[in-house]
View 1 (cartoon, rainbow, N blue to C red):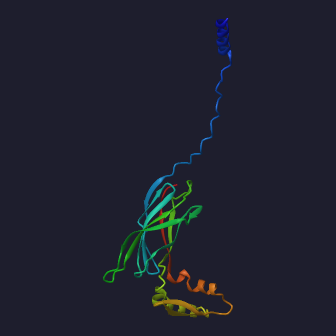
View 2 (cartoon, one colour):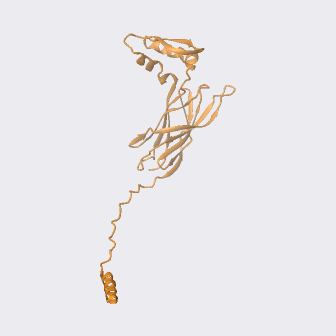
View 3 (cartoon, one colour):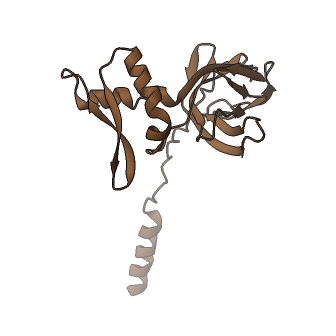
Length: 220
């Protein structure tokens, strides 16, 4: 009897429906964007001069989503000059998202201007951007002053500009804790302190504007 019961159990187990694996629907794959080209090109005009500063951009490289170029420019003085504004312009658009890092710095010697070279990079270039006539524009160079530089270098220039524009703001250098700092000693009653500071400490007083433009064929 036990043998018959055991055979019956095995028979029922063999006849039981087995779990059939269901087809798993394929997941959608991420859209693969077209390949970004890698193109290097030289500029037809490698040196340009404006506002007493020579800027040189010999070649540019389009690499993936970036465009990079080595930018060298002469220095007006020993201040910490850097690229303050730049853009990449092309057919149907432009990019102003950039970074600039120091590559080399040559101090002025024997009456010869110093030279600074930066690595200029533009980011987030669209994959379909036509860069066959790409223009790298250096819009401005600047040397943001240290606090002590305002009294020794910038205050006469700022005060003269204010006087020429008929803006009744009077500046003076006040010594505090052994340090001389430029301060606004008087301003029009209709002008707030914040408005006066925006005028006095504007970057126009330590910025040299171009533009310096360089054309490259970096592909379509």
